[in-house]
Image (cartoon, rainbow, N blue to C red; front, side):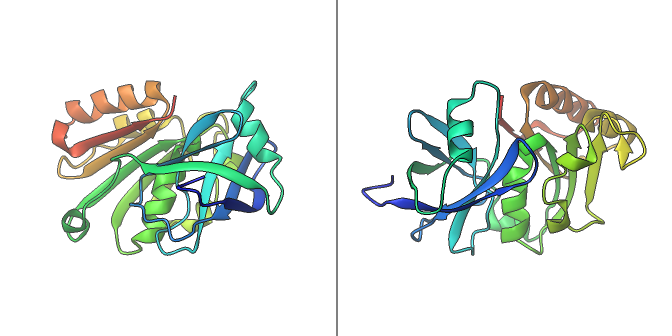
Length: 214
C-alpha cells in the first residue's frame, strides 16, 4: 500500500495458462511510462506498469514462475482484495524532447513487453519499431494494441508465423540505424547479446537503454 492508501484489485485477466494482467486501483498515482511498481503480500516483487498514463487504473503483466510466491499469489487475487504497493520507481523512460523527433527501437522478450505497451499506449504518436521475442504466437501478449506495421513477433519455436528466430537473429539480419534510440527489456542474455550487436552496428552507447528482468 502506498502512504496508507489501499489499492484494491479490479480483476485478473488471464492471457494463457501462466500469464495474466492484474488491474487495480491507481488513486491518481503519477508515473512516467517505463517505470515499475513493487507489489506483493508475503514478499514484494517489481513489475513494470502495463497500463497507460491516462488510464484511471494500474495494470501489470505477470507470468507465473515455478516456485514463485508472489506471481502465483497475485494470480489468485479476487476483486476487492487489497494489495501492498510501493513506487513508482525506475529510469527506463523517454523524454518529451526526444519523443518529438526521435525514432525508437524497442526490443523485448516475454513479459518484457510491459513498458513498451505502456509507452505506446501513453504516446500514440511515438515513432517506434517493436521486436518481441517469444517462443510461439500464443505468447504475443495483447499484440493487437500495437501498430501492426511497427510490431515484429520473433518466434523461436514456431516457424512460419512471424519472423522465425530470436530477436538477436533479427538484429543480425536487419541493421539498425545508429540514430535510433534503442530500449531493451527482458532477460539478461538477450540484452547482453543485443547490446553487443547494436554497438557493432554503430549505435552509440548513449543511445542504448536497458531494463533487465532476470
